[in-house]
Image (cartoon, rainbow, N blue to C red; front, side, top):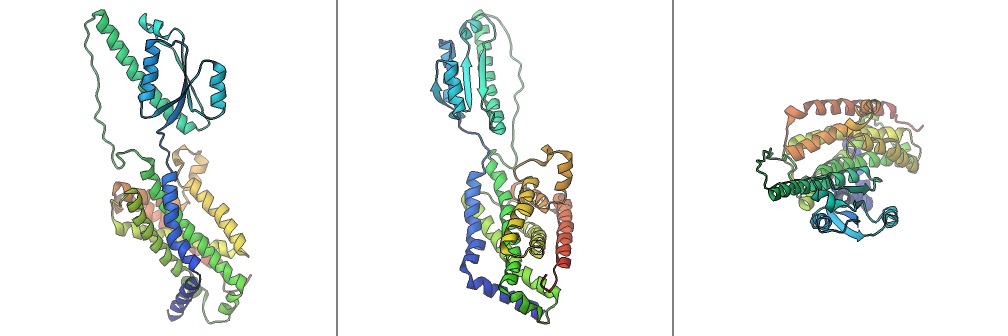
Length: 375
């Protein structure tokens, strides 16, 4: 135990000699959280559009005014030809082109459907789909108002039966994607800190020759592994506490569930990231190799397959099977459940258990590969 403690002290002395390391571990995560938190926003709030009003009637101008007064649409251009429509959309200046038919007012006056063509820039399918929903909702409301006005003008007696839903949105009442994304960013930052720093630190020992000094000491491989990993675990916990505090201060997102359960789950998650970092160090000869392997072989696949940004349910079945061995997938479910929903161990025990099994397996395999000798 004394030997392990001495290795841990040695690691912290090395950190102390390198102020940039402390800045990377304690300051950089906060900066990354702020930037990513504001950037990772999938909400569509300002849809740039143009209008080609061939009717140029009172009714068509009223429709255009509805869009212009909406909180979601920004009317940037009014054009007079299809060529202008094509040029502006090709230039990426608008996401929606609204083309009102020449006989729009006449059709409505004669109880015929008014024709409006909507052209979306589908380069970003998600934004186009959301914009289409906003447009359909606005036109549906306008169509219902026109129908009621026509019946009143004709003197028809009618009664309107309708269903009025009382909508309640739980966990994220404002429907902001930031509230969903920011807790997930905590998992990404923790992976970056523990995985990359662990792999680089051990490979650095090989490069500068201090690993040879450790080899001639009476330290066992197990003691060396524990002494190497414990400092990074402590730094990982410190980063999590700092980032969670920054999450509340900058975005007003507080942990609704158990802090102790979150920290306990974080410890289990760190086991897997430290194990991956240790594994990368065993197959790398230089720090450059370790960095490339950590980023392109481990971090990017874990990010894409964890459900951080892309729903796992939308992935092919074969890919969904692969996600079952991604520890970040379970941590995403856990941290979002605790932070946003305030749920506890009774709802999350399966994810915690699977993450524990994966973490112990990864750490065990990596420890077996790590030998107290130079390859």
